[in-house]
Image (tube, rainbow, N blue to C red; front, side):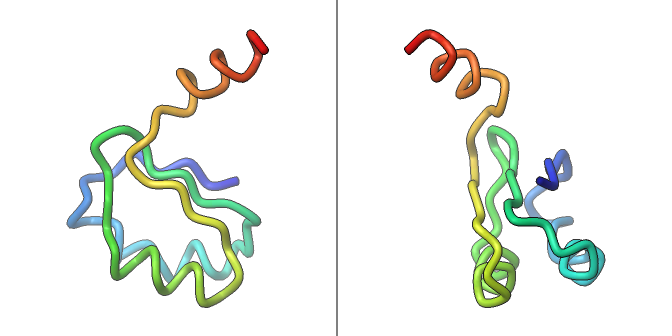
Length: 64
């Protein structure tokens, strides 16, 4: 998984590097969304999560 902590407008500059790493998932943290980058990643078969906090979601799932 690649966890993205960059401004939404800065994400596209990292798409090539992310694609080269071939992660299964790209997680854009709370407040980070970029549809163009997400579409490029999804076309490569990478699952994309946008505008979600990994720590919050992990804690929520761990309580189940």
